[in-house]
Length: 205
Image 1 (cartoon, rainbow, N blue to C red):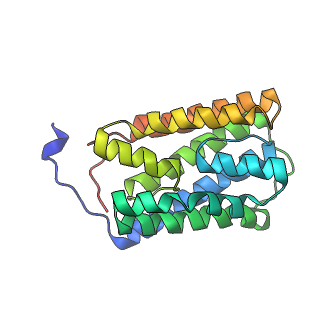
Image 2 (cartoon, rainbow, N blue to C red):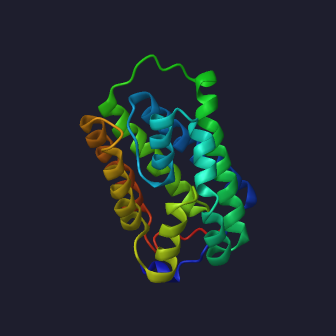
């Protein structure tokens, strides 16, 4: 059956709230896995992790500041509801990694497992945000804009920019950690590519 004839069901405010809360929790957990394993990812989260590794500055503060310029594009191109939800999502992801040690004690983690599980969790978290008209700012905003306005799949845009950030990681992390970061980026992008396509999900916010 052609999905274009199916009714588009609008999300309730409670559904949007829960999606943002749980989606960012998934991302925050994935970031915690990556931080423990000393690997990185793409997008502004990966950039913030690289700054943390290179300077010792806290991930949350760097992630929040790096995203600030992208709110202008979000407001002009995606509207204020999207911008507000994205601002809240970025704020939560900025806070979650700092709170994780109070909730979760990780004495050690296999880097390969961290790359796969962390990448998949971040992909699922980002997917939940996308489907409720929110994002994690930065590259997510650009990816959603290009998909909505130019029909370029968000996952491909995300992966292309993530790859450039991983190239920059070669100057900060050992080669084996960069390769593991690439594995994680592939898993994260596959989750988005396979599940976030125009017309596939009919819910709207």
